[in-house]
Amino acid sequence: MGTEVIKNFKNQVVTRTQGTSNPLPKRLYTLKEASVYLGRTLWGLREMVWAGRIPIVRDGKKMFIDIHDLELYIIRHKTTWV
Image (tube, rainbow, N blue to C red; front, side, top):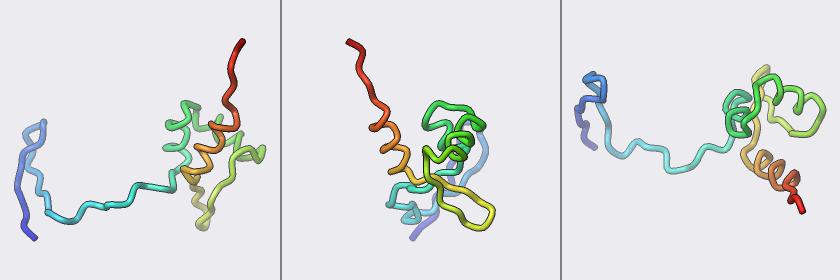
């Protein structure tokens, strides 16, 4: 596997190693990432978690939200106006 030296848009030197990208999509999101995904504030998402509307995955003190749970929340709360 080779390395390639390139310059980014700020003209900084960046090295890129071929074959090291992660082929799997990210499944667990931090609360901050999940709040951006849902278009909510971080505290708004925390309140949803505390109310039990969205389940979390705990790793010690860290909390993550499964992308499938975010999608399920969106699907369950879809509505149409007639």
